[in-house]
Length: 124
Image (cartoon, rainbow, N blue to C red; front, side, top):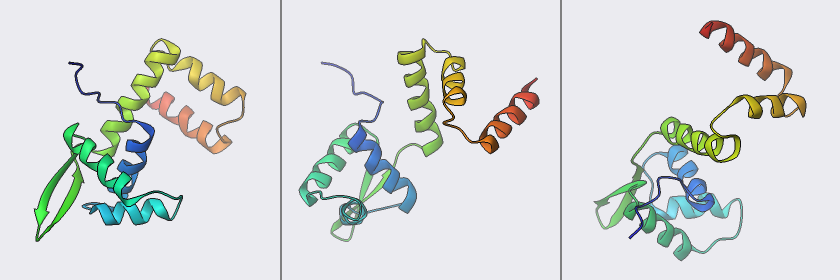
């Protein structure tokens, strides 16, 4: 049996963004937030959140007769893992080609570049 993946699927990440934004949530809370952006079935959200609980991305507790869900890890930790996974798969673990690509193709603003330079100077 394959171990549970720590990497979030696109649908899981979409749900996690709602959970991180709203804090403790019900399936209904997530469903309504996603429905504001696109058509989705309530049962699909419920199934995904059950799967995410099984994968330990979410934890749940019973409050009255309703499950309330929370993230098991902070957003910053998950994003760091996602970026690290991306760098490993696409750029052999090096951030330099990614940063150069973003800068050359004007995918970062002048203000963002200035912030990157400031951070680089601080590390030196």
